[in-house]
Length: 484
Image (cartoon, rainbow, N blue to C red; front, side, top):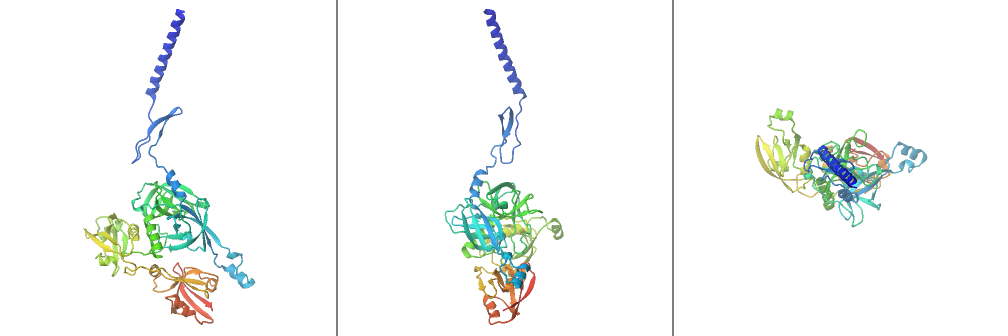
């Protein structure tokens, strides 16, 4: 028995020694695995799991709450557009007496929008709703509404529409001026008719001008991201990780029409200004500083012997403008507005575009190497401080169209002083001749058209033909002879 007990004790002690040696060997051979620390985040700590060590990052962005807030406030917009007359319609109308043949079926398009108030105001892109004859808005919970257009602003590609309900989910505004390159963002919208789609990315750049709006008065200072968006995302939300709206998705850079790495959103600070103007006035109250400017590159700086590339160069100053009143001169360099650096035309347009006529801004200029501060009182396009009234539409059944006065932007864009723009077109004499919405009638039978009253007088008691002269939205002049 003593021999047996001795053997058992020796075996037990041997086993304990073996386990201790094994543990000591395992501890010596183990290595900590950790990711390199990311700026603003602590280094990750190793943890054990399923036979090996791996790193789990700490304080990674949490998109769950932001996504949950956003999807309920982003809506699906279906637009119905009346198909405009074609040669086929004219053929069936003239030879078979079938003016409402199947070619007149409406065209359906889709996009996105963001609810910004609990009583149903929705911001979206101008190009989503501009030609719509009917708008249907569908919420994330599948409720559907008819919507009306409150205002359209082609200069920023923004529009405001409204549905009739209260207690709706909505997004709070963020501050797009504080958005930083490298910041995480979410894009929420309805790509390819797939509702409530959330994608993530980072801010790749700010104040991008991609020349997509195509007018001299356009305000292009996009937030560029790599968050994937596709057709149908237009008008959707770009939000930060807090779920605050920082931009309205508007465009992608693509040769195929689908996402290929870059997307662009309109900064929310511009959207806030457009929305508040439409709600308060029914029309955009746009401020102008009254200068023509250009970016400064190394070649231009060398030619003019400028000491650095910062700021934007003032080429000319408009007489009686805000800049002229503040003694800003040609050859000055605008460096800052209200303490914010201005290093491109896009940045200056964005900074001014957030203000109304009558606002004061502090402008830091460089004149011949000296820094000078100027207090500038902003004016409107007409160099006054008066409120621009909402355009009133006038309808003429004889022509099958409704008209509205042209804006100051139209006058500047087309180089005209008068005209009436077609705001709505119905089956009638103008449509049958190929006239389209947006066409500006400048003269009827060589009589200048400045108001709805001029149109009324020009066609009153007319029999036979009249000659209509005007301009298409692309700037092409055209003439149409119609019979009355």
